[in-house]
Length: 231
Image 1 (cartoon, helix red, strand yellow):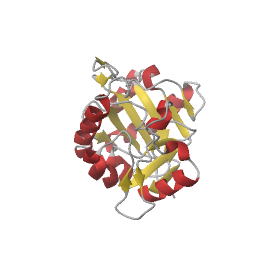
Image 2 (cartoon, rainbow, N blue to C red; image 1 turned 180 degrees about the vertical axis):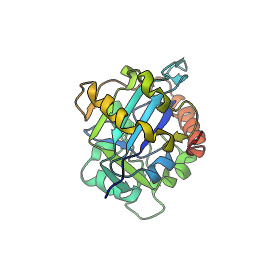
Image 3 (cartoon, rainbow, N blue to C red; image 1 turned 60 degrees about the vertical axis):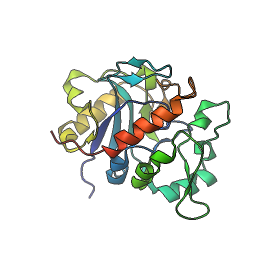
Image 4 (cartoon, one colour; image 1 turned 60 degrees about the horizontal axis):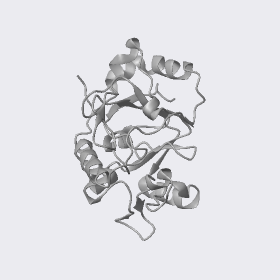
């Protein structure tokens, strides 16, 4: 019998629409947060909360701490290779099209092409060579059709649940166990239909041509530190 779900929470310093990627009816976490992607199971919740210094495309920052950027209940878990095959056959919009005028296509998270075997080829996208080890180290892609993506319209977490907000590197899981059911009740009580995009990414990745590189470097550094925080 399935145990109670876990709630993984972490801080998002770079909310650009790639990780998570909430578009085309399926919210996916495929790049970044390797430890969460290895550990989370179908039925678990993954919560991304805002950073005190959330990056904007012009280099400025904004205080988004204590807010829900997105929440997804994992409804499917695939290996990275399986996810590549899935996107090539059923969800091509998740494959990055870097020259597209549609930013949703440019931030596609199906970055790794396994069609010619392993190791996979890295498609041109939001990540660069420095991200390969941590991206592939996550081993799995998390998918959800039961999610809420708020982006720049992120609502505040109520004080009774504020303890779940992760305001440092790494992520919380065991520490969140007393709050899982209360969190799910609260997020659903907001009255939004699940599976919808309710705001825009705070970070416009294409506002400055240098943005992609410093975002990718920052995420590579934080992903190395993606360990569970127990205090």
